[in-house]
Image 1 (cartoon, rainbow, N blue to C red):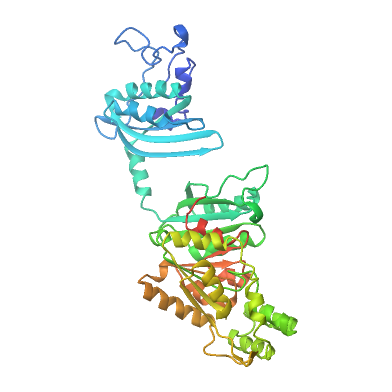
Image 2 (cartoon, helix red, strand yellow; image 1 turned 90 degrees about the vertical axis):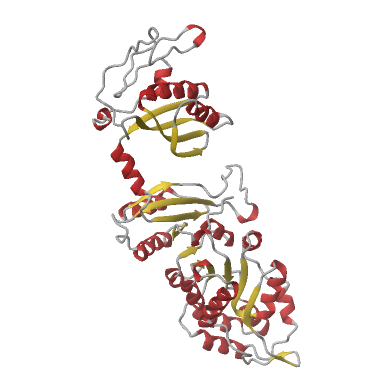
Length: 472
Protein backbone atom coordinates (compact mmCIF):
# COMPACT_ATOMS: atom_id res chain seq x y z
CA UNK A 1 0.00 0.00 0.00
CA UNK A 2 1.33 3.43 -0.92
CA UNK A 3 0.63 4.81 2.54
CA UNK A 4 2.34 1.89 4.20
CA UNK A 5 5.44 2.39 2.08
CA UNK A 6 5.55 6.00 3.24
CA UNK A 7 5.73 4.82 6.84
CA UNK A 8 2.14 5.65 7.79
CA UNK A 9 0.74 3.78 10.75
CA UNK A 10 -1.81 1.10 9.97
CA UNK A 11 -5.38 2.20 10.78
CA UNK A 12 -6.58 1.36 14.28
CA UNK A 13 -10.14 0.21 13.81
CA UNK A 14 -10.91 0.44 17.49
CA UNK A 15 -10.30 4.17 17.16
CA UNK A 16 -12.64 4.31 14.18
CA UNK A 17 -15.33 2.38 16.02
CA UNK A 18 -15.02 4.67 19.03
CA UNK A 19 -15.52 7.75 16.88
CA UNK A 20 -11.95 9.05 16.95
CA UNK A 21 -9.51 10.07 14.26
CA UNK A 22 -7.20 7.57 12.66
CA UNK A 23 -3.96 8.08 10.78
CA UNK A 24 -2.92 6.10 7.75
CA UNK A 25 -4.01 5.68 4.15
CA UNK A 26 -7.54 4.59 5.01
CA UNK A 27 -8.42 7.81 6.83
CA UNK A 28 -11.88 8.49 8.29
CA UNK A 29 -13.32 11.65 9.73
CA UNK A 30 -14.47 11.53 13.33
CA UNK A 31 -17.87 9.95 13.75
CA UNK A 32 -20.09 10.91 16.64
CA UNK A 33 -21.85 8.41 18.88
CA UNK A 34 -25.41 7.56 18.04
CA UNK A 35 -28.25 7.15 20.47
CA UNK A 36 -27.89 4.78 23.43
CA UNK A 37 -24.14 4.51 22.91
CA UNK A 38 -24.40 2.83 19.51
CA UNK A 39 -21.68 3.50 17.00
CA UNK A 40 -22.72 4.77 13.58
CA UNK A 41 -21.18 3.28 10.48
CA UNK A 42 -17.76 4.98 10.48
CA UNK A 43 -17.06 3.92 6.92
CA UNK A 44 -20.40 4.73 5.38
CA UNK A 45 -22.28 7.00 7.78
CA UNK A 46 -24.14 8.96 5.11
CA UNK A 47 -27.21 8.12 3.11
CA UNK A 48 -27.59 4.65 1.68
CA UNK A 49 -25.06 4.14 -1.04
CA UNK A 50 -23.12 7.27 -0.13
CA UNK A 51 -19.60 6.97 1.35
CA UNK A 52 -18.43 9.89 3.44
CA UNK A 53 -15.28 10.64 5.37
CA UNK A 54 -13.02 8.65 3.05
CA UNK A 55 -10.33 10.45 1.17
CA UNK A 56 -9.22 9.16 -2.18
CA UNK A 57 -6.27 6.78 -2.03
CA UNK A 58 -3.96 5.30 -4.63
CA UNK A 59 -5.00 1.97 -6.14
CA UNK A 60 -4.69 -0.84 -3.61
CA UNK A 61 -2.42 -3.83 -4.30
CA UNK A 62 -4.29 -6.97 -5.23
CA UNK A 63 -3.10 -10.58 -5.15
CA UNK A 64 -5.28 -10.96 -8.23
CA UNK A 65 -7.60 -8.62 -10.12
CA UNK A 66 -10.48 -9.48 -7.82
CA UNK A 67 -9.15 -10.44 -4.40
CA UNK A 68 -7.18 -8.63 -1.67
CA UNK A 69 -5.09 -9.96 1.20
CA UNK A 70 -5.12 -8.34 4.64
CA UNK A 71 -3.37 -9.09 7.89
CA UNK A 72 -5.75 -8.50 10.82
CA UNK A 73 -3.98 -7.74 14.12
CA UNK A 74 -6.37 -8.17 17.03
CA UNK A 75 -5.52 -7.35 20.65
CA UNK A 76 -7.35 -7.13 23.93
CA UNK A 77 -7.62 -8.44 27.44
CA UNK A 78 -7.39 -12.12 28.37
CA UNK A 79 -9.16 -14.37 25.88
CA UNK A 80 -12.62 -15.61 26.81
CA UNK A 81 -14.79 -18.23 25.12
CA UNK A 82 -16.55 -16.87 22.06
CA UNK A 83 -14.06 -14.25 20.92
CA UNK A 84 -12.60 -16.35 18.13
CA UNK A 85 -16.06 -17.53 17.14
CA UNK A 86 -17.29 -13.95 16.88
CA UNK A 87 -14.47 -12.98 14.52
CA UNK A 88 -14.49 -16.08 12.34
CA UNK A 89 -18.28 -16.20 12.07
CA UNK A 90 -18.24 -12.61 10.86
CA UNK A 91 -15.63 -13.49 8.24
CA UNK A 92 -17.68 -16.54 7.33
CA UNK A 93 -20.60 -14.38 6.21
CA UNK A 94 -18.52 -13.36 3.18
CA UNK A 95 -16.33 -15.09 0.61
CA UNK A 96 -13.25 -14.94 2.87
CA UNK A 97 -10.36 -17.42 2.91
CA UNK A 98 -8.14 -17.74 6.00
CA UNK A 99 -4.52 -18.04 4.85
CA UNK A 100 -2.79 -18.12 8.22
CA UNK A 101 -3.50 -17.59 11.90
CA UNK A 102 -1.58 -17.27 15.15
CA UNK A 103 -2.48 -16.43 18.74
CA UNK A 104 -0.55 -15.78 21.94
CA UNK A 105 -1.59 -14.79 25.43
CA UNK A 106 0.57 -13.52 28.26
CA UNK A 107 -0.78 -12.39 31.61
CA UNK A 108 -4.09 -10.68 30.75
CA UNK A 109 -3.18 -9.66 27.21
CA UNK A 110 -4.37 -11.43 24.06
CA UNK A 111 -2.75 -11.03 20.64
CA UNK A 112 -4.32 -12.66 17.60
CA UNK A 113 -3.28 -12.35 13.97
CA UNK A 114 -5.32 -13.61 11.01
CA UNK A 115 -4.27 -13.34 7.39
CA UNK A 116 -7.31 -13.31 5.12
CA UNK A 117 -8.12 -13.05 1.43
CA UNK A 118 -11.39 -11.47 0.43
CA UNK A 119 -13.09 -10.07 -2.68
CA UNK A 120 -11.64 -6.65 -3.50
CA UNK A 121 -15.06 -5.08 -3.86
CA UNK A 122 -16.05 -6.24 -0.35
CA UNK A 123 -12.86 -5.52 1.57
CA UNK A 124 -14.10 -2.42 3.39
CA UNK A 125 -17.40 -4.09 4.19
CA UNK A 126 -15.66 -7.13 5.65
CA UNK A 127 -13.20 -5.06 7.66
CA UNK A 128 -15.91 -2.79 8.98
CA UNK A 129 -17.97 -5.72 10.22
CA UNK A 130 -14.94 -7.33 11.85
CA UNK A 131 -14.13 -4.05 13.62
CA UNK A 132 -17.56 -3.64 15.12
CA UNK A 133 -17.88 -7.30 16.08
CA UNK A 134 -14.45 -7.18 17.72
CA UNK A 135 -15.41 -4.02 19.59
CA UNK A 136 -18.36 -5.88 21.08
CA UNK A 137 -15.84 -8.43 22.39
CA UNK A 138 -13.58 -5.74 23.88
CA UNK A 139 -10.94 -6.18 21.19
CA UNK A 140 -8.96 -3.73 19.10
CA UNK A 141 -8.34 -4.42 15.41
CA UNK A 142 -5.70 -3.09 13.04
CA UNK A 143 -5.36 -4.19 9.45
CA UNK A 144 -2.50 -4.13 6.97
CA UNK A 145 -2.93 -4.66 3.21
CA UNK A 146 -0.49 -7.26 1.88
CA UNK A 147 1.00 -6.98 -1.60
CA UNK A 148 1.54 -9.95 -3.88
CA UNK A 149 5.32 -9.66 -3.58
CA UNK A 150 5.16 -9.53 0.23
CA UNK A 151 2.86 -12.53 0.32
CA UNK A 152 5.14 -14.58 -1.95
CA UNK A 153 8.18 -13.58 0.10
CA UNK A 154 6.39 -14.85 3.19
CA UNK A 155 5.62 -18.12 1.42
CA UNK A 156 9.30 -18.57 0.52
CA UNK A 157 10.30 -18.11 4.17
CA UNK A 158 8.53 -21.39 4.93
CA UNK A 159 11.40 -23.17 3.18
CA UNK A 160 14.28 -21.83 5.28
CA UNK A 161 15.96 -24.07 7.90
CA UNK A 162 14.16 -24.21 11.23
CA UNK A 163 15.55 -24.83 14.68
CA UNK A 164 14.38 -25.08 18.27
CA UNK A 165 16.18 -23.22 21.04
CA UNK A 166 15.14 -24.35 24.52
CA UNK A 167 15.95 -22.02 27.43
CA UNK A 168 15.70 -23.53 30.91
CA UNK A 169 16.52 -22.09 34.33
CA UNK A 170 15.20 -21.78 37.85
CA UNK A 171 14.67 -18.06 37.34
CA UNK A 172 15.22 -16.48 33.94
CA UNK A 173 17.39 -13.38 34.17
CA UNK A 174 17.18 -10.86 31.36
CA UNK A 175 20.98 -10.55 31.11
CA UNK A 176 21.85 -14.07 29.88
CA UNK A 177 18.60 -14.33 27.95
CA UNK A 178 19.52 -11.14 26.10
CA UNK A 179 22.91 -12.65 25.22
CA UNK A 180 21.15 -15.69 23.75
CA UNK A 181 18.80 -13.62 21.59
CA UNK A 182 21.64 -11.34 20.45
CA UNK A 183 23.69 -14.37 19.41
CA UNK A 184 20.75 -15.74 17.45
CA UNK A 185 20.33 -12.41 15.68
CA UNK A 186 24.01 -12.23 14.80
CA UNK A 187 23.73 -15.74 13.36
CA UNK A 188 20.98 -14.60 11.00
CA UNK A 189 18.23 -16.44 12.88
CA UNK A 190 14.78 -14.95 13.31
CA UNK A 191 12.54 -15.82 16.27
CA UNK A 192 9.16 -16.87 14.87
CA UNK A 193 7.42 -17.97 18.06
CA UNK A 194 8.03 -18.32 21.81
CA UNK A 195 5.73 -20.78 23.59
CA UNK A 196 6.23 -21.15 27.33
CA UNK A 197 6.79 -24.76 28.43
CA UNK A 198 6.86 -24.39 32.22
CA UNK A 199 4.13 -23.38 34.60
CA UNK A 200 3.79 -19.79 35.73
CA UNK A 201 5.74 -19.41 38.97
CA UNK A 202 3.69 -18.05 41.84
CA UNK A 203 5.10 -15.14 43.84
CA UNK A 204 3.57 -16.71 46.96
CA UNK A 205 5.90 -19.71 46.84
CA UNK A 206 7.04 -22.51 44.56
CA UNK A 207 4.43 -24.63 42.80
CA UNK A 208 7.08 -27.33 42.48
CA UNK A 209 7.49 -28.31 46.11
CA UNK A 210 10.95 -29.32 47.27
CA UNK A 211 12.35 -29.29 43.75
CA UNK A 212 11.97 -25.54 43.47
CA UNK A 213 10.59 -23.43 40.67
CA UNK A 214 11.75 -23.49 37.08
CA UNK A 215 11.27 -21.46 33.91
CA UNK A 216 11.35 -22.85 30.37
CA UNK A 217 10.76 -21.26 26.98
CA UNK A 218 10.91 -22.72 23.50
CA UNK A 219 12.21 -20.33 20.86
CA UNK A 220 11.14 -21.37 17.37
CA UNK A 221 13.73 -19.85 15.03
CA UNK A 222 14.43 -19.91 11.31
CA UNK A 223 17.03 -18.75 8.80
CA UNK A 224 20.73 -18.77 9.45
CA UNK A 225 23.45 -16.38 8.22
CA UNK A 226 21.51 -15.53 5.08
CA UNK A 227 21.43 -18.97 3.45
CA UNK A 228 20.73 -22.64 4.04
CA UNK A 229 24.44 -23.48 4.18
CA UNK A 230 25.50 -20.28 5.88
CA UNK A 231 24.84 -21.28 9.51
CA UNK A 232 27.70 -22.92 11.39
CA UNK A 233 25.67 -24.97 13.87
CA UNK A 234 28.69 -26.30 15.77
CA UNK A 235 30.05 -22.77 16.26
CA UNK A 236 26.64 -21.54 17.40
CA UNK A 237 26.32 -24.37 19.93
CA UNK A 238 29.80 -23.56 21.23
CA UNK A 239 28.90 -19.90 21.66
CA UNK A 240 25.63 -20.79 23.41
CA UNK A 241 27.60 -23.11 25.70
CA UNK A 242 29.91 -20.23 26.66
CA UNK A 243 26.90 -18.16 27.73
CA UNK A 244 25.74 -20.94 30.07
CA UNK A 245 29.14 -21.22 31.77
CA UNK A 246 28.78 -17.92 33.59
CA UNK A 247 25.01 -17.93 34.07
CA UNK A 248 22.35 -20.03 35.78
CA UNK A 249 20.73 -20.88 32.46
CA UNK A 250 20.67 -23.90 30.14
CA UNK A 251 20.29 -23.50 26.38
CA UNK A 252 19.57 -26.33 23.97
CA UNK A 253 19.81 -25.98 20.18
CA UNK A 254 18.20 -28.62 17.95
CA UNK A 255 17.08 -29.04 14.37
CA UNK A 256 13.32 -28.71 14.15
CA UNK A 257 12.85 -31.93 12.23
CA UNK A 258 10.80 -35.11 12.38
CA UNK A 259 13.32 -36.91 14.61
CA UNK A 260 13.04 -34.27 17.35
CA UNK A 261 9.36 -35.15 17.61
CA UNK A 262 9.90 -38.89 17.32
CA UNK A 263 12.52 -39.98 19.85
CA UNK A 264 11.78 -43.52 21.04
CA UNK A 265 14.44 -44.54 23.56
CA UNK A 266 16.37 -42.90 26.42
CA UNK A 267 19.58 -44.44 27.78
CA UNK A 268 20.94 -43.18 31.11
CA UNK A 269 24.20 -43.36 32.92
CA UNK A 270 23.42 -44.28 36.52
CA UNK A 271 25.91 -42.78 38.99
CA UNK A 272 25.56 -38.98 39.35
CA UNK A 273 22.84 -39.07 36.71
CA UNK A 274 19.89 -41.24 37.77
CA UNK A 275 21.19 -41.20 41.33
CA UNK A 276 23.03 -38.41 43.13
CA UNK A 277 26.09 -40.35 44.19
CA UNK A 278 28.90 -42.53 42.87
CA UNK A 279 28.11 -45.97 44.28
CA UNK A 280 31.74 -47.08 44.19
CA UNK A 281 32.61 -44.11 46.42
CA UNK A 282 29.89 -45.17 48.88
CA UNK A 283 31.31 -48.69 48.94
CA UNK A 284 34.76 -47.25 49.54
CA UNK A 285 33.58 -45.33 52.59
CA UNK A 286 32.41 -48.57 54.18
CA UNK A 287 35.73 -50.19 53.27
CA UNK A 288 37.70 -47.35 54.86
CA UNK A 289 39.30 -46.18 51.61
CA UNK A 290 36.83 -43.43 50.74
CA UNK A 291 39.22 -40.59 49.87
CA UNK A 292 41.56 -42.71 47.76
CA UNK A 293 38.71 -44.11 45.67
CA UNK A 294 36.93 -40.75 45.36
CA UNK A 295 40.08 -39.12 44.01
CA UNK A 296 40.42 -41.80 41.33
CA UNK A 297 36.70 -41.49 40.47
CA UNK A 298 36.95 -37.72 40.02
CA UNK A 299 39.99 -38.04 37.77
CA UNK A 300 38.22 -40.68 35.68
CA UNK A 301 35.08 -38.56 35.29
CA UNK A 302 37.22 -35.65 34.13
CA UNK A 303 38.87 -37.93 31.58
CA UNK A 304 42.31 -37.67 33.16
CA UNK A 305 42.62 -41.45 33.70
CA UNK A 306 41.54 -44.26 31.40
CA UNK A 307 38.23 -45.57 32.75
CA UNK A 308 39.14 -49.26 32.60
CA UNK A 309 42.40 -48.70 34.46
CA UNK A 310 40.71 -46.48 37.06
CA UNK A 311 38.02 -49.13 37.55
CA UNK A 312 40.60 -51.86 38.25
CA UNK A 313 42.47 -49.58 40.67
CA UNK A 314 39.32 -48.87 42.65
CA UNK A 315 38.22 -52.52 42.73
CA UNK A 316 41.59 -53.55 44.18
CA UNK A 317 41.17 -50.99 46.96
CA UNK A 318 37.78 -52.53 47.84
CA UNK A 319 39.13 -56.06 48.24
CA UNK A 320 37.78 -57.82 51.32
CA UNK A 321 34.63 -55.67 51.74
CA UNK A 322 31.67 -57.58 53.18
CA UNK A 323 28.78 -58.32 50.78
CA UNK A 324 26.20 -57.23 53.37
CA UNK A 325 27.20 -53.61 52.81
CA UNK A 326 25.44 -53.55 49.42
CA UNK A 327 21.90 -53.79 50.75
CA UNK A 328 22.25 -50.84 53.10
CA UNK A 329 23.55 -48.63 50.28
CA UNK A 330 20.90 -49.84 47.82
CA UNK A 331 18.12 -49.12 50.31
CA UNK A 332 19.22 -45.47 50.51
CA UNK A 333 20.12 -44.53 46.95
CA UNK A 334 19.48 -40.77 46.50
CA UNK A 335 17.38 -40.63 43.34
CA UNK A 336 18.00 -37.52 41.25
CA UNK A 337 15.39 -34.76 41.25
CA UNK A 338 12.90 -35.24 38.42
CA UNK A 339 13.99 -38.80 37.54
CA UNK A 340 10.74 -40.56 38.59
CA UNK A 341 8.62 -37.94 36.80
CA UNK A 342 10.73 -38.12 33.63
CA UNK A 343 10.73 -41.91 33.42
CA UNK A 344 7.00 -42.21 34.19
CA UNK A 345 6.15 -39.62 31.52
CA UNK A 346 8.35 -41.21 28.86
CA UNK A 347 6.98 -44.69 29.56
CA UNK A 348 3.43 -43.39 29.14
CA UNK A 349 4.55 -42.03 25.77
CA UNK A 350 5.88 -45.45 24.76
CA UNK A 351 9.62 -44.82 25.18
CA UNK A 352 12.05 -47.62 25.98
CA UNK A 353 14.27 -46.83 28.98
CA UNK A 354 17.73 -48.21 29.63
CA UNK A 355 20.68 -47.91 32.02
CA UNK A 356 24.19 -48.09 30.58
CA UNK A 357 26.43 -47.75 33.62
CA UNK A 358 30.05 -48.06 34.60
CA UNK A 359 28.64 -48.81 38.06
CA UNK A 360 27.24 -52.11 39.28
CA UNK A 361 24.29 -54.30 38.27
CA UNK A 362 23.23 -54.85 41.91
CA UNK A 363 22.18 -51.22 42.24
CA UNK A 364 20.99 -50.78 38.65
CA UNK A 365 18.56 -53.68 39.12
CA UNK A 366 17.13 -51.92 42.17
CA UNK A 367 16.32 -48.91 39.99
CA UNK A 368 15.01 -51.17 37.25
CA UNK A 369 12.51 -52.72 39.66
CA UNK A 370 11.50 -49.34 41.13
CA UNK A 371 10.89 -47.54 37.82
CA UNK A 372 10.14 -50.31 35.31
CA UNK A 373 13.33 -49.78 33.31
CA UNK A 374 13.57 -51.99 30.22
CA UNK A 375 17.32 -52.56 29.85
CA UNK A 376 20.23 -52.68 32.31
CA UNK A 377 23.92 -53.05 31.45
CA UNK A 378 26.54 -52.51 34.16
CA UNK A 379 29.51 -54.19 35.86
CA UNK A 380 29.35 -57.29 38.06
CA UNK A 381 30.81 -57.37 41.56
CA UNK A 382 32.78 -60.55 42.28
CA UNK A 383 32.31 -62.08 45.76
CA UNK A 384 33.76 -65.21 47.30
CA UNK A 385 32.61 -66.42 50.70
CA UNK A 386 30.78 -63.11 51.17
CA UNK A 387 33.87 -61.00 50.57
CA UNK A 388 34.71 -58.84 47.55
CA UNK A 389 37.63 -60.33 45.63
CA UNK A 390 38.78 -57.01 44.19
CA UNK A 391 38.94 -58.52 40.71
CA UNK A 392 37.01 -57.48 37.62
CA UNK A 393 34.29 -59.95 36.60
CA UNK A 394 33.50 -59.98 32.88
CA UNK A 395 33.87 -57.08 30.46
CA UNK A 396 34.04 -53.58 31.89
CA UNK A 397 31.26 -51.25 30.72
CA UNK A 398 33.34 -48.25 29.69
CA UNK A 399 32.65 -45.44 27.23
CA UNK A 400 33.23 -47.50 24.10
CA UNK A 401 31.07 -50.33 25.40
CA UNK A 402 28.25 -47.87 26.13
CA UNK A 403 28.38 -46.67 22.51
CA UNK A 404 28.26 -50.27 21.27
CA UNK A 405 25.30 -51.07 23.51
CA UNK A 406 23.45 -47.98 22.29
CA UNK A 407 23.79 -49.16 18.70
CA UNK A 408 22.75 -52.71 19.59
CA UNK A 409 19.65 -51.56 21.47
CA UNK A 410 18.62 -49.19 18.67
CA UNK A 411 18.89 -52.04 16.19
CA UNK A 412 16.94 -54.37 18.48
CA UNK A 413 14.13 -51.81 18.82
CA UNK A 414 14.10 -51.10 15.08
CA UNK A 415 14.84 -47.40 15.44
CA UNK A 416 17.53 -45.07 14.09
CA UNK A 417 20.28 -43.53 16.21
CA UNK A 418 18.58 -40.16 15.71
CA UNK A 419 15.65 -41.48 17.73
CA UNK A 420 17.86 -42.23 20.76
CA UNK A 421 18.52 -39.87 23.67
CA UNK A 422 21.63 -40.48 25.78
CA UNK A 423 22.11 -38.84 29.19
CA UNK A 424 25.29 -38.81 31.25
CA UNK A 425 27.73 -36.74 33.27
CA UNK A 426 31.21 -38.24 32.92
CA UNK A 427 33.96 -38.53 30.34
CA UNK A 428 33.07 -42.22 29.86
CA UNK A 429 29.64 -41.06 28.63
CA UNK A 430 31.00 -38.92 25.80
CA UNK A 431 31.00 -41.67 23.12
CA UNK A 432 27.29 -42.40 23.59
CA UNK A 433 26.40 -38.71 23.94
CA UNK A 434 28.01 -37.98 20.57
CA UNK A 435 26.45 -41.02 18.91
CA UNK A 436 22.84 -40.46 20.01
CA UNK A 437 20.41 -38.25 18.14
CA UNK A 438 20.24 -36.11 21.28
CA UNK A 439 23.10 -36.23 23.77
CA UNK A 440 22.38 -34.55 27.11
CA UNK A 441 25.21 -33.72 29.52
CA UNK A 442 23.52 -33.68 32.92
CA UNK A 443 25.21 -31.58 35.64
CA UNK A 444 28.41 -32.54 33.88
CA UNK A 445 31.97 -31.28 33.82
CA UNK A 446 32.69 -28.57 31.19
CA UNK A 447 34.62 -31.01 29.01
CA UNK A 448 31.58 -33.30 28.81
CA UNK A 449 29.18 -30.43 28.13
CA UNK A 450 31.35 -29.29 25.25
CA UNK A 451 30.96 -32.69 23.58
CA UNK A 452 27.19 -33.01 24.05
CA UNK A 453 24.49 -31.32 22.02
CA UNK A 454 22.72 -30.04 25.12
CA UNK A 455 23.65 -29.49 28.75
CA UNK A 456 21.29 -29.39 31.73
CA UNK A 457 22.79 -27.96 34.91
CA UNK A 458 20.10 -25.78 36.48
CA UNK A 459 17.14 -28.16 36.97
CA UNK A 460 16.41 -31.85 37.51
CA UNK A 461 16.28 -34.69 35.02
CA UNK A 462 12.70 -33.87 34.07
CA UNK A 463 14.13 -30.81 32.33
CA UNK A 464 14.70 -33.23 29.44
CA UNK A 465 10.94 -33.08 28.84
CA UNK A 466 11.35 -29.44 27.83
CA UNK A 467 13.92 -30.47 25.21
CA UNK A 468 11.25 -32.73 23.74
CA UNK A 469 8.82 -29.80 23.58
CA UNK A 470 6.58 -31.21 26.30
CA UNK A 471 4.92 -28.44 28.31
CA UNK A 472 3.51 -28.57 31.81
